Length: 60
Image (cartoon, rainbow, N blue to C red; front, side, top):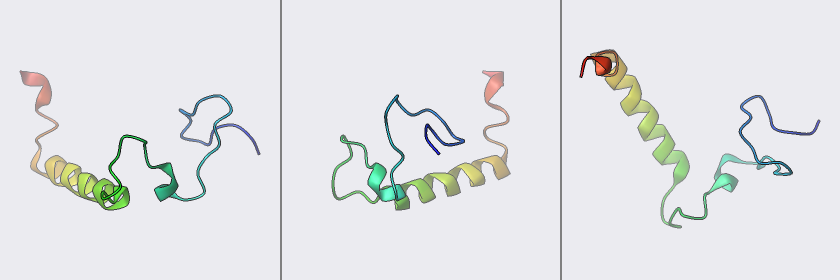
């Protein structure tokens, strides 16, 4: 199977990484664990949704 996966968004000719950690952007410092960062962001977003913060964002 070739081409981008279901998520899409890849550049032409770009191959999907074998592991999530292999997708480290060139701008990310080596000391940052991107998997841990993604998990923290996900948890914060879930908490914000539970509190209703993102649902009220259009009223500004």
